[in-house]
Amino acid sequence: MDYRVPILKIRDVLIVPIQIDLDDNTAARLQHDILTRIEQTGASGVIIDISVLDMVDSYLGRMLGDTAVMATLMDASVVLTGMQPQVALTLVELGLKLDTIHTALDMESGIELLDAMKKA
Amino acid sequence: MSVLREIAITTEHDIVLCRRACREVAKEYHFNLVDQTRITTAASELARNIFEYAKTGTVTIVILDGPNGDVGLKAVFQDNGPGIEDIDSAMREGWTSHKGMGLGLPGSRKLVDDFDIQSTLGEGTTVTITKWRKQG
Amino acid sequence: MSETTLNRRQLSDLISISAGMLRLKSIEGVCQTTAEAMVKHSVFARCVVSLLEPDDTFVRLGFGGLNAKEISALRDMPKSTLESMQDQLVKKFLIGRSYYMPHDQTDMQGLESSKKAKGRSKTDNQWHPDDFLFIPLYNPDNQIIGLISVDDPADGLRPTEEILLPLELFATQTAAVLENLRNVERQQEMYEQLRNQQMVVLELSTPVIQVWEKVLVLPLIGSVDSARAQQIMENVLVKISETSASVIIVDITGVPVIDTLVASHLIKTVSAARLLGTKTIITGINPEVAQTLVHLGVELSEIATRSNLARGIAAALEMTGKQIVDVD
Ligand SMILES: Nc1ncnc2c1ncn2[C@@H]1O[C@H](COP(=O)(O)OP(=O)(O)OP(=O)(O)O)[C@@H](O)[C@H]1O
Ligand SMILES: [Mg+2]
Image (cartoon, rainbow over all chains, first blue to last red; front, top):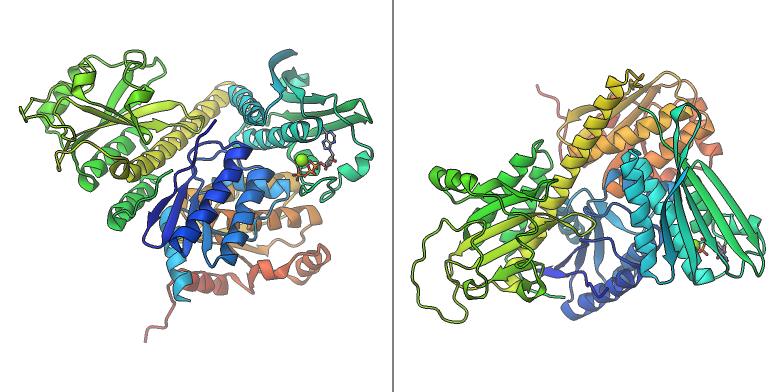
């Protein structure tokens, strides 16, 4: 499977819509792609939208949390948007808090949050 | 009781196939959305443990007919890998022999109703999980 | 992988439309909104949205840029099936996640052959009136659940990956909304089924009240046992995502004691709500409950608290950029 998640750039924000259930390799490559893209473009924010995902397990959860920390080290903020309620509940029950990553209900509020963080 | 699916775990992508199969069966038997997600997530963790620690193994998904019309989804994760030396430690949150987070086993136990783990050093590991369908 | 500096306006318009679609209750409404949005916010002047039925035929449900006559003509045309599309939805036509079929490479008489050829002379990057362009709608398992067919680009050019990306992104959102609606339908069917079998359906007496646009209040009353706490937690999270609430206030003034199990459900709800992007405020914590929470080792920094519901609401409004002022 050589699917790659598309990364779009709008002004200085990268938008990463995860559109299908990712296997571990694809998830790992996505982390690499996001960080590389931050470096290339100097983006100050990243929105990772997972509204389509019906499951996040510890591997993907950890990848997302780590990516947020790594991006912060590179001076970019990551907002995770669109998590479905049952996915959130299951993640918490599994024991994963993902407290390193910002969250928003949808892409629109994600962009607002990034704007607000930039002003602050 | 009937065996519905059998998935061989040999490549990393089989983890995806395994959790999808669990989702499909849970959906087909009308588990609610939260429980479908719990089953799928637990399956993903346990299938990944097989791939990570034993390299290969099999996952079997079975539907159980319990008393008073109860329906249960049971999944068995079986491998002939190295086995686990100290099961009590392995079940503790945060305990990992490699560089994991030590969430897979204790986390998936919390997501299901019944959880059983058998392991013999040098012979292999079998983890069995069951989720009962809620009524109403 | 692709990177483009896109028209921010277009994308943010499309995003806010897809956010609005979450509130639509009918599948047809979502298709229609999608078709209209496509026409309004892309270069394409005409759009038809079709969904795949269980019998593998496509039903046209949304129309953009077409007049009533054209729509009824399209409705009368024979339905395409997934099978009849097999030759079209192939790799050689793929651009990004969409399929583009130049007229001279397919003999298709498909979804939209009611249009008239304008006889434009053909050059390589020119769109021809008999070309077809489909943006598929995929479910999470990557199966096609429908097609967005667009036509008549204003620039008269063949599509490029850059043009298609924002549209594909929008299509993803549409597909997600449709999947959600279908899930709701399925659950409703199940619920009916249970009713018919005269099974006792556990009604839950946990109202979630929307006090302001983006503010919910969950008043907990009486003793909460673990089973009920679990149910409440699930309801609250679903309600949050239904209403796009940015703050939820859990008022526990009416709860005399909380055992550790229930308290841990409460904490879980706060954590899960945060993952959705929603803040929680707990109000009305009495001394016993405070003791339980501390004994549980709860990280209080994670939870906003206020002494009573009124203060909770004031705080919530402030968080959403509103303020309560005295009028005098
Ligand atoms: N099938 C197995 N065969 C052999 N050892 C196993 C198996 N499953 C788990 N273990 C052992 O149990 C430990 C704990 O497993 P667990 O899944 O809880 O955490 P992890 O895999 O280390 O990390 P995480 O799952 O959070 O990424 C593992 O580190 C490993 O040593
Ligand atoms: Mg593991």
